Image 1 (cartoon, rainbow, N blue to C red):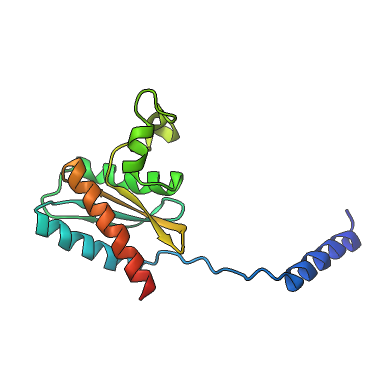
Image 2 (cartoon, helix red, strand yellow):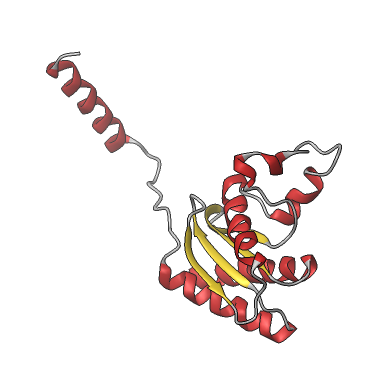
Length: 165
């Protein structure tokens, strides 16, 4: 391919973009400031119900933006919360919704052994959405499965409110 062909292709693509009637959508990202506000709300709710969690907020690629370890949290909760945040971004679904799919006979049975065993198949992880788009993940670990699931669901709702402010 010569320079003239390359220039022609670029000109065609630019023209198509300019003449497109589809609106361009700006994808929101989870900022550190937003992650701090979200974690603070989850931690307040956790204190209210008597749980000492690890709270992880990840970006859309599952990489942690923030990890808060509550005083007295279980050591094991650190890795579990990190992997819950990864799981929900990797699969774009809550870990609670993944659980029945990963049980014997489920359509995703054995998935927890993929991705270097970083997939968590029990509650406590929620994708963070902005306008339906997954822009991050929340992982909570430190209570019972039911408590972690409730805290993550609380956090997902808080995130929706925070991004709309």
